[in-house]
Image 1: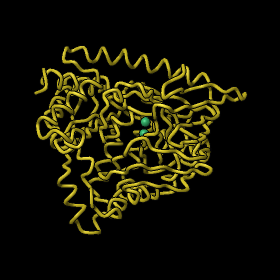
Image 2 (image 1 turned 90 degrees about the horizontal axis):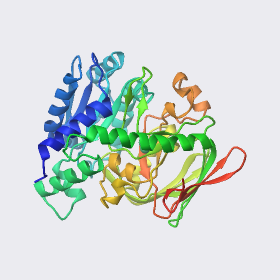
Image 3 (image 1 turned 135 degrees about the vertical axis):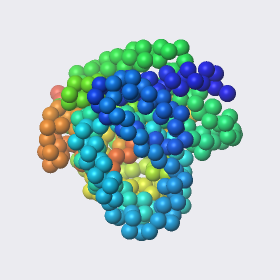
Length: 413
Ligand code: ZN
Ligand code: ZN
């Protein structure tokens, strides 16, 4: 039993819709969620209409159904774009439908599935959904990712507990890191947190670093060049039409884009990665002039290799994000096996696409133009964690001054 569950779930729904999506009157928000998440989705739908939504669209997903398709579906269905899905996304782009996506499926849902099928569908879906997702990551409209614990996910996170007990334990953790207590003040607490993170992002922006150098005891020794006019973004963004929103909930990160061709050295992952329903463990990557030249993993290496080979940009970095080791999520001591949570517990990097909002003027450029100012282009975007308790990051400014950014895993300022 979770204490005050109904009140907390309601507070979470309001947080997602009011602070996260910040639905505006007349908008047509689209919610995509696993069928397990119906209780939360219903509250969100009601909250959207309360805010004056024109119509709320819900797309249900189901891990079991997806897995059956990956295992038994006809080969052709992975490489041929379904016209109705493409038409829907094109229409959603036309009306600039804000997106709320609820995650929470089994982190190992696709265990044993042929990696070629996963890669084929990623290419196909990436292709036809690209216009919508490009507009989304360029912040043409609001978007947000939240979570709902399915039993399979909860039992992975809490292997000593089964069924409802595991789900309750995961709910308690999610409510805690989202600063939800059930007292109805969640929105207020969030707004204060958002202001805090934004203050630190401003400090980073004022330094205008040319490079960041990462070192830790695992063996990480990585230099990342940052684009001229890069922008550090934290806890909240603004659409091109001026609507504030928070893309991830919870969120602790402050992120920007690296120069796609400016990464050199080796970086060790500090946590396992759940990659499209498969776990990749104990891995490192070697970079040469930005390109991932080699990877090694103790488990799931073939899935990692397939993912960085989806397209040219998949083997280059698109995001660099700073998260203090002493963060509310990491302090729970829980490994969530879900990027939404784990990436906010640790400094991370992402291979694949960069957010065009991370460089001044990036949104106004086409793909070619974005690439020329350092922003990586790909249909892929995969975050992986690199933060440790002993991580040190030193920034070098344009005039060569060295400034400690991270010391012993936490912000040095
Ligand atoms: Zn991130
Ligand atoms: Zn990311």
